[in-house]
Image (cartoon, rainbow, N blue to C red; front, side):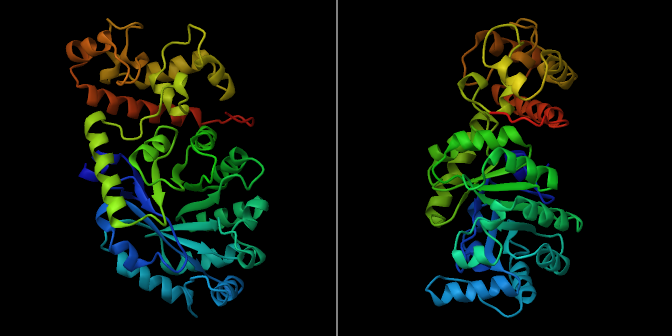
Length: 379
């Protein structure tokens, strides 16, 4: 296991992510040279946005004539291939943020460039010229077209991200489910002014990799996103080297201290579905029982999932704890003498290793929860 995988436990497009920080696309700004200047402090980068067909290239030229910065070229395949080649040895997971008017526009690019990059559908741009060309936010108002594009790309066996703006679609939870069922791998969400509560709703609606975006320039802000469902955070205008380096160092310290950089808050404190890893048996009146009802999981199924998932792991130990197994114990940030004694005397692991085991348990729980997601939404 390499250091990146040990640190984040996150693999995207077959590549271990070295740090859960990404650079978000900014048209006319974020290209290969921009990324290479910052590669030591990021794990992923979405270059672009790049217009890729006649309609969107015309929209880019119109926007550039009005004073916006745009990437302009005559041959999108040649331009994008040059960018991808420049980043091949960067160690950064690379995504292409693309603006196209039809599914065929996206598949033409993916067929030419191959599966070494993530293809990010730009359903985020709100410039009138781009919306008139049928992309950007237009896709959020016609989600069936967005799903068609995802499905078309997935026929080429490539990794698909969708960049969205929260609050444009009638219900972001419904949208997240649609993207997931269409085959998307990543949702990259500009949270606007909605904050972590909207992020938690999206996390509770689907199991996709979530990248949180918009004004996440401090460690506290990043931790707020991580503890409510984000796998990564992304920066755009503030993606200067100093800000990125500070975030990277602080997140690394957090992981080294706790063992789980994006551990959720406990469910009773507003945590997302991953927080089930910290919940006890459903024997008292607390947020656990109504949450299980909302996600369509019975008490018996919940208990069975956790009991089976910890078999043969250190979390199976803990006879002196409240429910005779560390499977039912809370987050390490909550003081518990019985848990700490059980870790030392029975499980033989450190508190940091305990949190790493809890992370693995959360992943097993998520696999089972999203095996058959109900039609109604989770909060």
